[in-house]
Length: 313
Image 1 (tube, rainbow, N blue to C red):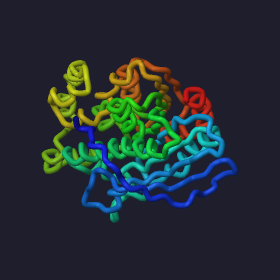
Image 2: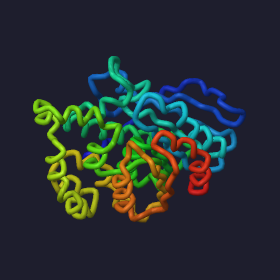
Image 3: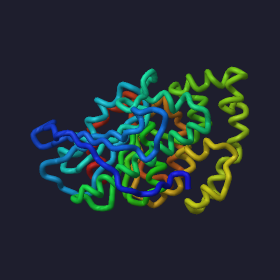
Image 4: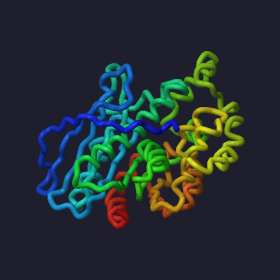
């Protein structure tokens, strides 16, 4: 299966723990990614482990940030606060973002610029890095074999796929995320650069879509999803287009019955409301809250999100 990998030993490099508050220590973790690329910066998995001095649980939280180059500092508030409340938290830097951005690129942009084949590889890279991060935390010894997860925006998309394929993730909170790229690609402000590529004939051949063609490809998308009874069916049943293999909507139904909370923004200019609705429906209509905000301004509700998440985790 696309998101499977062969477990093996790997060497971890840790920096000396830094005291970020009186009751939380932060350690930078680095190890070689199981997925190797032409970019040395991306070939190392980098994350930050926030450890409480007095843990209240041995179930760590994995935190995944969104796409871009300005959200790491404000979103780091979440793993820090979880740790202050006794929950060990690991913030994983998603491939091609921040410290893992290849020279000459902008943080996160590669996911929007690649052709279809390489985008499949990019998503696989992110999911396997997340899964091996859980392997690392298991090796720490003080943690069990269960994990919880919070994913924001693009991090939520990666998290949904990972939760679908890895049963170690028991509970999750997804903030301002959605599924079905037919909506996100053609309606989101975040994908303008992608649409620009699709507007030229030379790039429509390379990237494989126009709006009309994309709608035609997706007309039987839900029929395809219904055929996916088990994870093995992802290999057995060929999708019309490879983008189905990294669309979180494809994986939503695998989360039914799991403990999930969604937060969506009423005025989200990045995740169209229909994309949020369809993902929520595919996940079995879990608990959902609407925020009176846009995409980035959802951070103003961080305390509300944190408090509800603490009750879940």
